[in-house]
Each structure stands twice: as structure tokens, then as C-alpha cells.
Image (cartoon, rainbow, N blue to C red):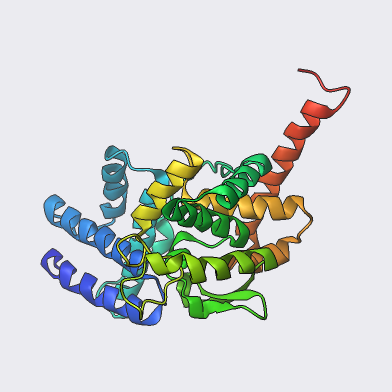
Length: 295
């Protein structure tokens, strides 16, 4: 396959996954960038996809860029999918995608926020008078009590809230729908927010998003990240609140299966990382309070 045709094939592949894989816009855009970089790499190195040394050289190239392992693996995943697509379309042949293996990642346990800190956050919200600050605090109280992903949060509309039944209907990764229970106290808070505070941010009455920026538009991911750092500290991300939600539920006795459904994980293995977080926290607590523990 000639390298000059690669970009055209990338376009076709991106159209295919956008139509058939149910991936989010962010994921599709990331895959496009990864494959465009791959196309440029082939061109600059005068390589063909079918060259047996291409992937080995690519890994060395990516390693020289000092990218995080998770970023390298995402790029390799995009390339694997792309080559499988080309093989199915008989554009290339003889490439064993099983040889395009991810690099090993040392998994770090996700950071969580303490019960004390989350309690302080709720107390601050209850006594705060500034409308913008109240909205910002509510966003993270909402993340902490629902476990939503950042994209799910910013795309959540009022119509997705089933007030009487007490749940949210969420469209998550891969356009999969799930139901997330919502606490009665949070329902009361949200109703007051919609009636008394959300109206100050509305510029377009047809806007149905639950949380609206000060410009009257849907929040961006970047804006939520910035607010998260202000509220939780520089090492806090929107995902930290999701991790905290999961960990605190496990500590409270919720089953892994129930947690898996609430988080929208396709595999129970993904959910199991939170058992390690909860166990670590319990071990730390035991070492502090057990009469026979050593300091």
C-alpha cells in the first residue's frame, strides 16, 4: 500500500467508526489525530504499513517523545483498529495485529477525597451566598453523589432527570444508556437550584442543560477541570470525584456488581480497582487507631 493513500484511508476509517462503533466525539477526534500522526510518521520515515519493522520503529519513535504510557497505548489501539479495517477491506494483508502489543502500565490507585473534605464541601455550599460559587460547588457535590464522568455531566439535561422515580438516565461511553439513582436530598437541592439560581445563567430559554456556564452555554471539559482544581486543590480532577463516589460506596457496603452498573463499566475488572482503594484506606485507618499498631 502506498503511503500517500494513507490519509484517505484514515478518513474512511474514521467515518466507519463514527457511524458503527458508537464512540464519543472526543474519542473519535483522538483516534483521528493518532492516525494522522501515524500517516505522517510513515511518510517521513518512508515506510509502508506492511513493512514488518514499521511497528517496532513506531514504538521507538513514540518512546522518544516521552509520552505517557496510556497515550502510547491509545495510539497503538487506534492503529490496531485501523489495520484490522484495512485487512477486512483487503487493502493490506499479512499483518498480525496481535503483534501490536500495548506497553505495560504500572497502575496507580486513583486519588480520593476524604469524608471530612466532602462534608466540608456540602457545608460550604449550604452557607454560600454567591450564586456562581454555589453553582460550582453544586457541580462537584453532584459528581460526588452520582459518580458521573465529566462528559456525562456537561451533556446532562434536565429532561434526563426522573424526579418522581429518583434516577438519572445517562448516555455513557459507546452510547450505552444506564440508570443512576439520585438521593432524595440532592433532588431537593437540584429543584431549588433550577428554580432560584439556574435562571441567572440562562440566556437562551431553549437551553435544557442542567449546568450552564456564566456565558449561558454548556460547560466545556476544560472549564470543569479548572473549577475542580479551585475547589478540591491542584491535584484534583473531575474524575477524582467519581473515584471518591465509588470508594465511599464500597466502604458503605455496596456490592461490586451494583457499583459496576452505576459507573457504567462494561467489565467488572475495571470496577475492582476500587476494592484496592477501599482496602488501602481501611488499612491506613487501622494502623492509626488499633491499640497494637506501631508508628
